[in-house]
Image (cartoon, rainbow, N blue to C red; front, side):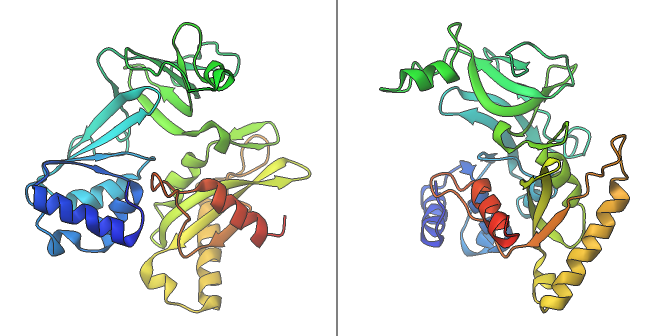
Amino acid sequence: MAVSEALCEGVFKIWEKEKCTVCLLNPVLVQKLLTGSMHLKYDLSHIGVFSMIGQRYSLDTVAALTKIFPKVAIVLSYSSSESWLLAKMIVNKETAVEEKYAKLTIEEGVEVKIVDEESNLVSRGTPGEICARNASVFLEYLGSPEATKRTKSSTGWVHMGDTGIMYDDGKIEVIGRKTEIIKRASVKIFPAHIEKVLLQHPQVSDVAVVGIPDQQLHEEVCACVILREDTRECDGSDEEAKILEIREWCKKQWPPGPDGLSLTPKYFLAMKKFPVLERTGKTFVRGVKDYALKKLNV
């Protein structure tokens, strides 16, 4: 998958030359399309479908893409190398609304269940780990029987390592990686829930929420934000003022809960861009967390 500037340009050239009709988009290609006016530089008029893969995309991102490519069908796909395509949704005017967005329909021939840490089924609407089974699941990790055993059960269920919810209508929503859950005191906090709200702030272009070690609560919440272009031109003091404004805005969104704690992040850090994984173009969350730990001297 394309990550570097040269590779991205190469992908767009191929799309134009081969008149591709169905194209895969990773996070880096999405940003290039949104900010680089690639639809003006290359003839992409023959594209009929964009399949968005790699990570969860905000509704604002998808909506911005549909404005540039109004005739292109946007498909949100959930898949993995171990299980292939599991679920998807087609984004259109009807589904591009908050209450319906990112609710994926399970593919025919695919079984999905949501389980707790002991692999017991959880009730509908309750977060848990996504497990899947179909005819396309992998046989084994070559030369790694222990890794295979951890990932795939004796009955063929693949543990995806993702947290998700199954709703009453059978659709699923992918919340994020299990390893990214923040454990503050006795409460599990899902970064995607906080990111979803923060992206509604007019000054926030992108955000990654990570857990930071805390002696008293085990972990605290840190929001690493990329400010919008017009905001990033300001000097350091103005940037600090914007971060303070975002913090105060968050306090209004999340009043203290029953435990007396708010979901408002304790820490806010401004970043110019997020590190990405070279192979997939996904945001490298571990890299974001390492940056935060170093910046906060934790």
